Each structure stands twice: as C-alpha cells, then as structure tokens.
Length: 285
Image (cartoon, rainbow, N blue to C red; front, side, top):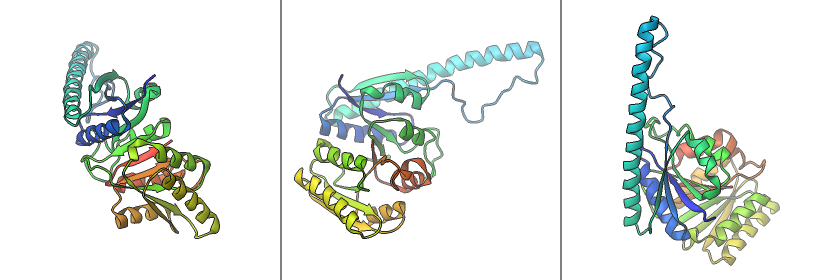
C-alpha cells in the first residue's frame, strides 16, 4: 500500500502553512499528498450549554426537537466548510507543483481518526494549533500532544507561514532509537541539500564525543554538510539557544526510550519547546 504525506487541515490560520509544508514534503519525497479534514459534530462549541434541564416536559420536548434540527444544520455547514477548505488547499498544492493531490473528509474526533488511517501515513503534517485554540502564541492545540503520543509515524508540526528549510538541528542522545532517526534522516530525500547540525545535550565526556562522532559520520557519509557540538544544561534551553544562534529553520527530535530527550514527548519540556518554537518541529518515531 502506498504511504502518503497526510496534511490535517481546519479553519485555523495554520492551514496555509500546513498546505505549503505538505506540498514541499510531497515533492521532496516523491510521495502522494492527501489533505484530510475531520468533521467532529459532537464537539461542543464555545459557550454551548444544556438549556433543557429546568424546563417543563412539553417545553423541553419542543426545545430538544429544535436543537436536533440545529445540530443537523450545523453538521451540514461543517461539511460544506470542510469541502471548500479541501478544494482551496488542493488548488494551492497544485500551484506548488504537486500532481493530483487527494482530499478526504472524515467524521469523528481528530486523534482517533488520524490513528485509524495511520497505516496510510508516511508523514503527518499538522499546525501548531487548531481553529478552536486561543490565538496567544504560547497556547497549543488541545489535540497536538495526544497526536504525538498516539501516532507512530513522523509528525511535522508547522507554523502558519512556510519557509523552505535550509538548516536543521537534530537533538541527539546516542540511544538506539536516536541512531535509527539519524539513519532515516541520512537516507531521506526530504533533507537533500539541507545543512545539518547535531546537538548532544549533556556533559563534555568521551562517551558523548563518541555518540556525536557517530552521528556526524553517518550524515557525512550520506553526503550531508554537517556540524555538531555538545552543550551542558537543560534540554529545552540548550535547543532553543542553538536554534537562535545558528538560524535553524527545522528542529528534528525523536521519541528516544527513557532518555532525557524522551521527556520532550511526555512531560512539560515538549510543551515548552512547541510553545516557544517559531520553526517547524519534526518528531521522528
């Protein structure tokens, strides 16, 4: 079965970035592109509440009928809005050079729907926040951490505006899973022509030098321009400082066992990194 670059779109301001990064990835990987819009008709909108509890039986029955009609109308509007968004992103991707991108509108909750189609996904592209999220820059979409936890495919989390990546940073800890991530990156056409940086966060030890040397060698052997270093400190702070210092425009991290980097995916450090990141973050699994 062919695996697709799958872009999850909604009505948020991130959708254009999702479309453009997905188109870039589809072309670089020579993989088909599918845009997915998930219609969740059971999620309560802002300010919705149960209005029927204190009404007399007859009034309540009438109100429930009206609410049912409104739900049907809202579902129809949601589907139509989704159809229009899918058409717009499809045309935008074609303008970027993607051949025959597909569209799918699915019913359900976002996380469960994405997990259901996971076997068809080569790379999932998502915005940092969804359409119902607060617009403050330090707020994350409610579904984002759940998707990162439950999906077992690479996930590219993107800002609202596209910038073709020229320099990427790999957070590396020397673990078996981390090495698999470097090997995947080394052979992937997605990163062709992109300068690579490798950062090991920890003490300046011979063990860490060996780990860093292995990662640098693997990438150089695959033809990448690469440099790297070891820095002490907290993982999130070290990564953020390196990104700013070297003008990195793509951060690559992985789910690395129970190492320090692993906490980026299950603790507050992940939230800190994603909240503070103005560049795409690629989570390798």
